[in-house]
Image (cartoon, rainbow, N blue to C red; front, side, top):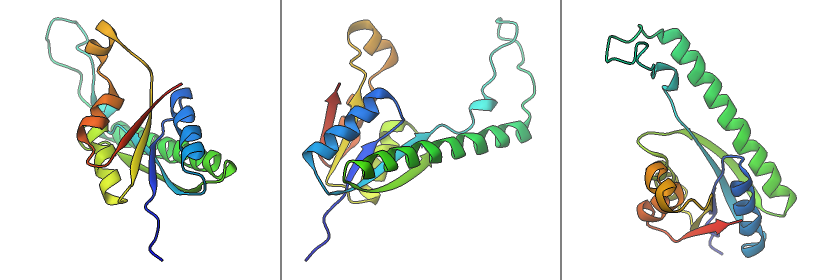
Length: 156
């Protein structure tokens, strides 16, 4: 018998991600699931213009950037592990996976779905609309555009 393709749940620990995980468990009971958490590297190197007038930025401490990236990677691994444990409690065969964002979150989630040969990607939605959605963008909508497999957007 062939292995069953896993479900990939984009998981950041938010209430929306928890709702997406719960919906995945209800719709796909007993299935293997990849609990995927994406983190953003290099945030410590993004320094605001101290004077606000386009002047030179303060020098970047590469050691501090590496330290913050290490903390972010460990935090993302912890979030993925927490999501996987939550998934196991509701009967899913869960594997936590965390990775750094290579370009943008949606493209990274789509790449992860391909790597794991996911049958479907499940993602929560914050439900932004109107101007807020235009200004902030919609990660769930962007995942829908980038994934080759079906995408289930869960609204809590």
